[in-house]
Length: 231
Image (cartoon, helix red, strand yellow):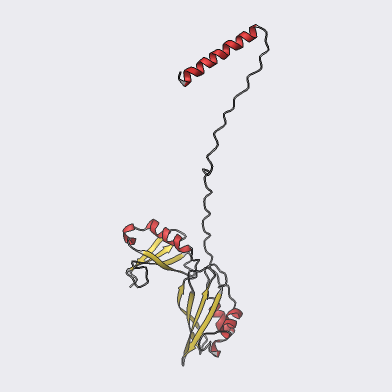
């Protein structure tokens, strides 16, 4: 007997029994309502909570002039830092331009400099804990006027585990053919006013000298802003 027919027979039998009891004067208890309870979900089938997105990095300049002046005087680079550069004014000008990825001081910091007849060059390098690499700032300093000019940056002090996110964001928006056979071998973060932007190096041989492309990614918007030939 199929399920629906069997259910109808059971209902009919129950009604006949109820009528017989009432006719005989037998008290009949009120029927208990049946509440349907959904089956429990199998163990481990619960929907996992979404992973919280990584907070957007907030670069900052965590050093004061006195911090960098002390680093100049304690420099262990060959030749140290020439005395004429060890002034609070020069140290302050450098501190204003020394951004870190998250606004926190580096775990390690070093300063090296050299002077010619009219000008000096100074390199400031810092490495954060858990960073992918070192942040490097190169300055030119006019010894006559004390003017400080930022010549170049090479910033790799972002968290090492960020590279997977950078690669995924890039591949999500680029034509797969452009990255076919290429691997991400490194990245550089850009200091303000270019907060959230990274130059990514994609190479075919897994090395900086291999053929490939450089990609400028805005991680905040998820847009690729430029694709360039590394040569």
